[in-house]
Length: 228
Length: 304
Ligand code: SF4
Ligand code: SF4
Image (cartoon, rainbow over all chains, first blue to last red; front, side):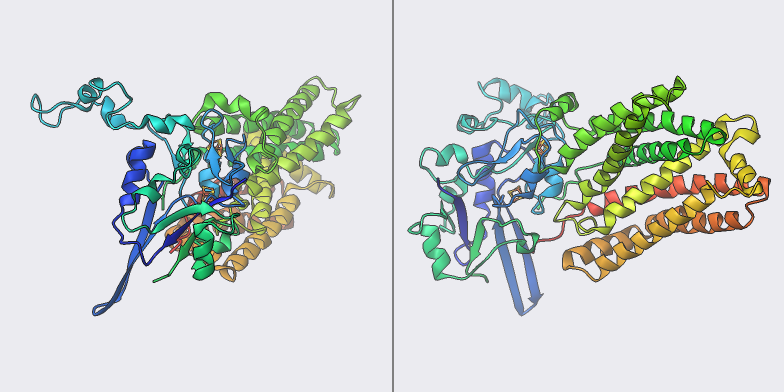
């Protein structure tokens, strides 16, 4: 069985944020939530300044505290080393949100994609309301991706959490996660940690790496190479 | 990083009411050994206990995103999840506490299976009391919670608030002052009885609580970056709630009051006032302590 992981090359990353946006498209991620995200900071004072940009996502931790915390086993590790979530079991207790030190689990406090149920027009009688637009489509909302529903809820309902699945619906068909596919500079590399010949193992043996929050003891599986 | 605060005040209310409930139950067990003068105290404590725990659980269930699914927690379990342990501990406790309260109401709490009910109920009460702290301390990213002193602090606070709740209710319901807990205490003091003394119990528990608080603060102050980040957030953003509410009102003043009460124990009127005042302060401080720890503890440690 593979043990999927990701390597992110910080020297290649251009800081464009494409991964964060395309992920929302692929996974029908509601407003305000970013399964794929980034943290950034500017350090130093002119003329000695440095801008640092680190793309983030669920680390699919080997020792995942979110999985330990879930009282009903809705958050679980699958046989491919992914941390996945079962929306039918989830009771919305948010114990996983509390336990995950990386802040990558999101809670649906409101009905997601609410804009498309809204009857209000931006310009009265001038523009269409979200609801009107949606009614022209045979989908929960205009840019809905039906592929997502192959392995997870297409849209996760109100009252439960949601998180990155490393695009399990794509990798089961031999494809790479969409953030990897959409990165214009090839900074994100996806692969099997247990396969010594995989591209990620080549990179991990060539360069030194760090992982976020290693002191949490969660054994994260997103590796950052070529630090600034 | 997502800065959403997952748990709101309903979780504090559950920790507070649930804590009072198990504290009251344990008080009922202790009072049960002391015979007739403490019958009213025992009865109040035993009845209040399941009511408090169940009310707390209702708040907790209403905090779920899918309250209707709460029943699934009984069969979809996870042996690694502290919350899952809590489901079984609390369900078990409520059942035993209700049976015990019924036995007391029927005046049959000294016969037959009552002994077993008391023992199992008592163990479950301790389990629930410890579970409350473990629920918080099991979170690796929460510097304020992730250490061993916190569950002790929460547990002792639960005992103190449980006793205080019963004292306050008892004082309120007994129109005849002579039968109220506080007056009983004073009477017991007069007769030179040292058997049972709320001032003494409170003093001991408050000292233990103070030591746990100090151990907790010291561990965090000298601990990892994650811990000092958590502590710093508490002390700089919630100083009044923590120092004044939780420490001074909830621990220091009640401790001084109970020590003074021990000294003047033979003066009925004074002792009554002291116990009642202390109980009210302990209840206020206990709520503030649990709430401020819950609120301040939910900040995420910055990764970068
Ligand atoms: S990064 Fe967070 S959500 Fe992902 S596996 Fe680790 S603890 Fe769970
Ligand atoms: S919110 Fe859902 S997935 Fe998260 S711990 Fe609770 S039941 Fe499990």
